[in-house]
Length: 192
Image (cartoon, rainbow, N blue to C red):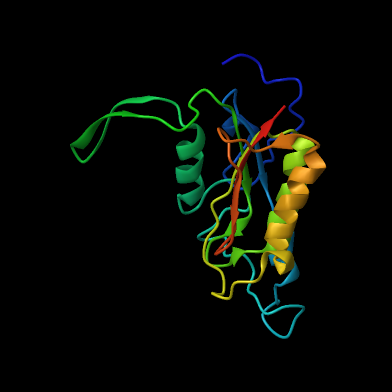
């Protein structure tokens, strides 16, 4: 791959078991968002919130993926060609992501055993716009099982705002935008 595009304004944030060397011409950016979780943390007793701190024995305070979900979704979106791929000798062939020649930036917003905070997701949306991302694929599921109407859901509102803020035309019959919530999933491609 050639040099990183000039329009890219993102960063490769570092942290536990993730250094600048983890980024390259394919993975050009990586960020992590934990302030939403940290705002809800109690310090072992009555504290500012009901949550325990991020468990650093099972999680990395960095963009590094601790449970494989982020790696899986990133490779589905932009994984390069893997020849002679198989699963325990079955399903042999070539594996690749949807856009194997695309560059990738990852935004970690969920924490193992702690969940995904709306404030972390919305902060990542702001970074996506500032960094100059062209395609967004979010895979966040779960939740409390109570669905809010779109006009009251912070992730739905934030995702629409994300597209408005970009100033770019979104969606077409060949590149649809999908926004649904039973855990917040947004897909869209900037056109223009």
